[in-house]
Structures are given as structure tokens and as C-alpha cells.
Image (cartoon, rainbow, N blue to C red; front, top):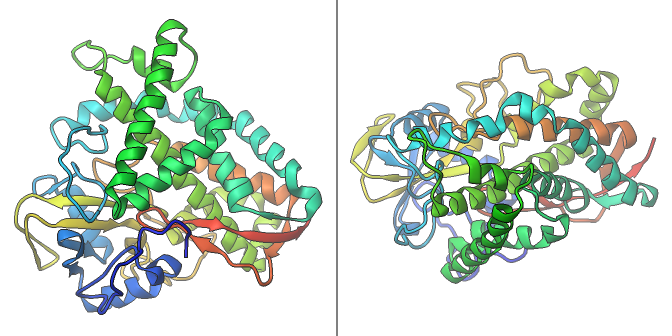
Length: 404
């Protein structure tokens, strides 16, 4: 179980169909059998925890909710013990129509495929510098020493922030996404510290603009030709920092965890490096890191199940991607899977704008690792630990290897 738990002092789950809790240690360690049990019973399950929360268990139910902005709002995107007043939104992820579309459209040019492709040399350099630091030891924590730092350094580079602040970023993410589920003080602390941090960088960019995302936000104009409001800029920067680091760190770590356990899959990628982009899609499907949330604002019916206003919804893209009705042998990782309509990046209007970046980071991370460390295994007698809450990935991944 992850350290710094948000689960402390909570009663154990008595029935996964009527009393589920996504912070439970059993869910953290291995959620897949739990999701299969839920899905076999019904397409929507409910818990009274978190002031009332539903979870769709099938691909179709997740897709239906994600597309239904009339009954489900994105104003709250984390399932927590409390429903705080919404004072500081983070558009576009917390926006509903009609505000959502213009908020998202002004960000899309910053993440175009051609813009992201320009990062490739930098990402390869980061990967090899990280590998240089531990390769002679013939062991490392692949989550802490590789996946983590690649994600931090990539976002720091794009935002014009110092790599040395990476520990701050990781602490804020943990307080926001894990501790903040049950500890409102931790969430507020992280929120205020992030705002103060970005306020200083915004002021420096006003004096001396750079070629980075913070400077770009100061130059963006909305559909009416107006500059973005200061709260909008702060909200977007908080979102980029949290979403851009934790998700790719988790996806890269889970991919290396899988390959450390599966020598045949590792050999397949080493023998056929051109397969890696296809394999990335399958690893995203099998180990999707992100679960989002919605708030039910009007009573409705989903997949034949009544859904009542006032509840939250745990919108599990990972559970949807293990649905046997859509993916044959869903619990088997097939690196050359031909048809793969996974929704690891979400579905509907809130589909992730950073998907091109995540794919590039994952592809390069695996390419550079396998070039230099083709043979690696989980370190015997060492524990792999996983993150809690709504983003899932290895937080400690001890491996041993024989470098090339």
C-alpha cells in the first residue's frame, strides 16, 4: 500500500457492490478482480461513502455518462469525503457546455502533434541521462528514478520551471490527489502553495517572456480577443502540473512493471522495435492510469440503472478498458492487439488534450530503456507499491538488470 495513505481510519469495505471505496488497500493493490466482480453483477454500482457515489462498470455505461453533459457535470472531478464550494475552477477540465468548448479550443494549439513531436530530442536526452545515473548499479527503482523524473523534467521543460522543484511538484500531487480525498487541509495547502508558486513565475514572465507554456498562457486570447483571466491562467497551470506528471509517470511505470514480469513480451519488443507504438496502446488499455469523476445534477437512467442527482460518479476508464464485451481476453496483454478502442485518455468532450505528449513520452521511455536495459526483472523480496485514489501506477518499482 502506498505511503501517506488517504485511507487511514476508514471502515473496511463490507460489500463491493453496495459499499465500494476506491481508497481501500485491496483496490489500490489489485483492483481488477474487484471491477470484474462488480461488472458481472450490474453495470452501475453505488456506495453511501463520499456522500453517495456511483461507479459504472462497463465500457458502454462509462461512454454514456461521459457523453451526457445534461445530467452529469464536470464541475467536481475528484470523489472526496466532502463537497467543497467551487471557488477556483480549472478550465477546461472543470467546465461544462457551453463554457467548455472555447476553454479547450484555446489550449489545443499548444499540444498539436507537430508541436509535441518537436520535444523528441529533449525527451531522449532526459531518458539517457536518467539511465546513465543508475545503469552501473545494475538495479534501480524504475518508478522513482526513471518514470517519475522523466515526467517531472518533461513538464518542467515545457513550463519553463526548474527541475530542482520536482520534489515540490510530487508532494503537491500527492496532497491533491491522495491525501485530499479525506484531508481537506492537505488539499487546501497544496492548492495555496501551487497558486503562490505559479504567481511568482507569472510575474517573472510578464517582465521577461520565454518560449514556455506559462508565457504562452499570458499571450492567449479567447474567442472575443480578450486575454485569459488571472484565475483562468492559474487554474490551467495547476491542471497541467497535476495531470501532466502523475498520469505519464503512472503509465510508464506500469508498462515497465509489466515488461519486468513478462520476458516473452519484452523479447517481442526487443526483436521488433517497430511494434512499440502499438504496444503502447495496449499497455494504455491494460493499465489505464486515470479515473475521473462527474457530479449527477439531474436524475437519469444509465444502462437500465436509475442514477440520482446529488451523488458523485467515479468514472473509471481503466474498468471500461477491461470490459470483455468490447475487448477479447481483456485481462491478457496482447502487444500487437489489432482492434483497440481503448479510452485511457477519456471519451467525450473532456478527452485529454495531452494524449500526444503522453504517447510520445511512453514510446520514447520504452525505446530508450529497452535499447540499454533489455533484460530486467522485479527485484526479489522487494515490494512494488501502487498509488492510491484516481490515478494508479507503481510508486516503487525495484528492478534488477543486466545492461546491454
